[in-house]
Image (cartoon, rainbow, N blue to C red; front, side):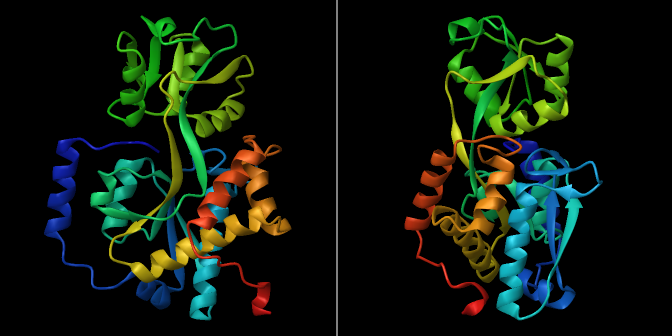
Length: 299
């Protein structure tokens, strides 16, 4: 979720986009024409978006996208279908949002570099960079990281944060957080650095009960939101309205809204998160926006 871009990649992106004709159709016009809202999703990202035992694409971000779909349908007065397209990582997803191949991609963190090419919704979760380590690890301070083999995806915010905490580590480059966790399972690395919620979900999938997640010494926290194509204010407004409505419903205890959040990241969710912290986060989101809660079904 935190993939950054090298100068080479940015240059290729600009060259590709510059060579294409200007996209005349807005996201809302495309939805009106096709009846589809197209979301890009990494299907190996528990609890945000993944394939369950019934071969269904599920997750917190999928439910979020469905809420946005409903909001758009209400605005247009017609049914809208959620169309899911698999994306591998940010270098795959961002160009497709930029060129209009995808309408929206969630599970993303805002960065100023990304903001040059896409717009972002408000956040619907808070995550942070953490370490996955064996239960008996001696790692408990920046000094304890000296010489340790840390698996991480290179050229990312994750690498920057770990090196700020301790520059004398052995970076073990991996292609994905899953690859790093599989290396930890084999004992070829001492820790994995990455998004805490993502690692907590994959920890269950990979059956790693003898491990634990600890804050990394220079902890960085960030909001998780969705990115959309630039210059589409009507679409962005509806997406934000759907997210703030969900947040307000959660704060006010609406059973439907609480259930959507808690089944994925609540205290009893796939990846347990403290409900009080969630409520504080959502309350802040609501008070920084207009109070948008309306009676259900327009009553």
